[in-house]
Image 1: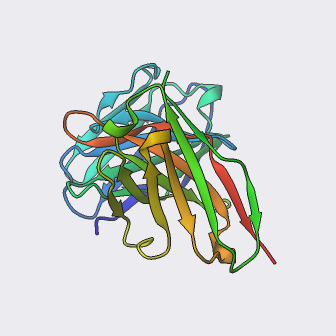
Image 2: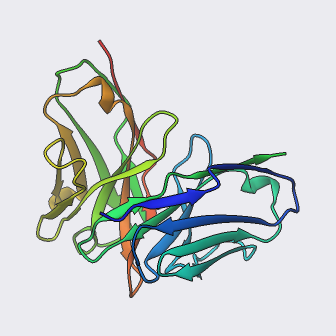
Length: 108
Length: 121
């Protein structure tokens, strides 16, 4: 089974900072990767799909890149509402899904 | 408007059975997969399995195969997640999700509000 790792597991940042989170797959997954944001007590929200496509309604400060085994989620200018936990997720052709362990972004 | 509305919180004892539900509305329930995701207290997201209500095709994560049963009643647009014998380690928040095909891959574009299951003696 494909495993996903994320780095860092947590980070502290300030409003206005550029933030980059990395997700690595144990084997190549082409562009079959999504990113989700979860705030405490809430259901996750889809941000990015197909590795780099922005979900409708998601601010343009969020962007995704990568293919194969290495992917990144970038927040170009961190806003107060962006403090949350971020998960990557992959899909395979057997309709099996895996989530990464998550990256918590909190206030410095 | 697409909505996934889950049943309310449950408190059960070890060994008891449980079935929680997720009602879909605002879309053709039989034309989309619907699945379940577990989140244990303070932990990350774990995909459990999905079902296609149109023909009941069901896929399970290897980690949850044999531990839970996923089903659906298309006549009332509702999916279910059930346990025959709960354990304390089943204590978690459970989300239902709708996988959407982007044209290339599947992602979870809609999520239910979550059902908190607490198993304690």
